[in-house]
Image (cartoon, rainbow, N blue to C red; front, side, top):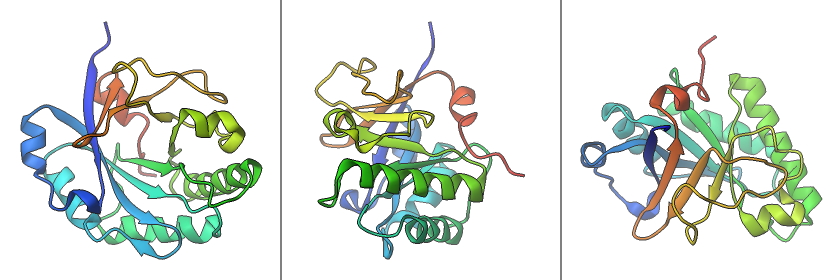
Length: 201
């Protein structure tokens, strides 16, 4: 039976995070919000990036998508923020948080997401995870993203048993709880997870 890794995800809403405490309690990986849209930077991101690193967690950074904006401009803002905080090391993860359409039709949102992911992958060699939820994906907002690892929000479903929407046929990370903290599981080892991460050129 495959090992299960436990993770959390955080943003400025959590304030100061006790990373060493989470590591002692069995958390093995984490994602921290870095940016949103083309200008917003999470004020806790650099601190969280350092804290995850110092606690030997598998480090992930995510961008909250604002599809009305320019995807390339947003991708550059995200990468600049990650590099300013210390940059990517072997095994680090990246994700696009795709959960709002900004009032745009699904095909526009999906096109934005594909362009953001393409720019990041071309710049880093790293294929981003896509974080989304069932009803959002089912209405076409994630079209063309099925070759990206799926990080699916399903807090109303049993841990490790989420429903998987098209265009995916499997999940990679399941966010199974969101109160009081977002909690996630990955089926596999630390090595399996870091294989999906950054590879220095």
